[in-house]
Length: 263
Image 1 (cartoon, rainbow, N blue to C red):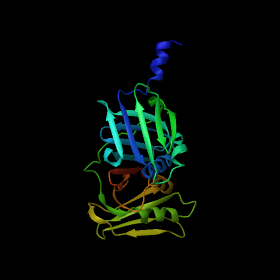
Image 2: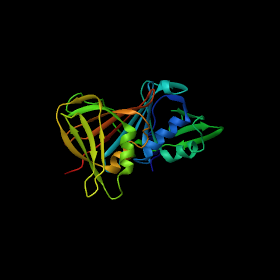
Image 3: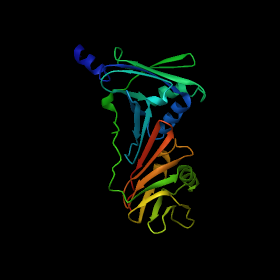
Image 4: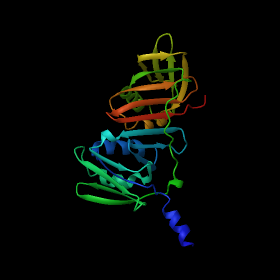
């Protein structure tokens, strides 16, 4: 093999710059929990603004995007003119985080002088993680939410939705989201002989048309796995994807998108 070509291939992950970032272990554990629900490898993008990452399911029906602001980190130092993108295997980080409590911290270090590894340090343990070539991974675009095209958007309690999805009997693959413009109601409903229903009265109501759209139970459940007891903004409409946005913590923003199922 040509040695120069081999060297270029080895340095596919290279981005010029370096960073050092220390994060509370609780936030790191939550982030990994959300990502692992959808896949096992992803791209961490570090920049002056913090960490952007996400995951899309193999069938491209569900995606999760997260932004951890630099303000969320206990210590954050970034040097470079462009974002640094790193392909990571989540299990290699979880090997360390699973030994930590929420009171611990984990430190991430990267230097483009050694472009193919990420260093993590926690509780006197230091691990060198071999990075995955970016070309082998699906990158999740970080795009703003469209201001138009939705039939509705309003605030809902995310815990109530998670509890409902856990209560759906095994074997039921889908549920309906029913939005009634006149009643200002948001309802989740399964079909069959023993339908399960959740009716909510959303806050900050904004709806232009009633709708009924089907989604996969497991698809939405996996997309909001990491979410805790918080309110979220939900966007959707007739035969449209559902988009849910929430603040996991101050300076820790997440959003999940789920494609509709065919009728």
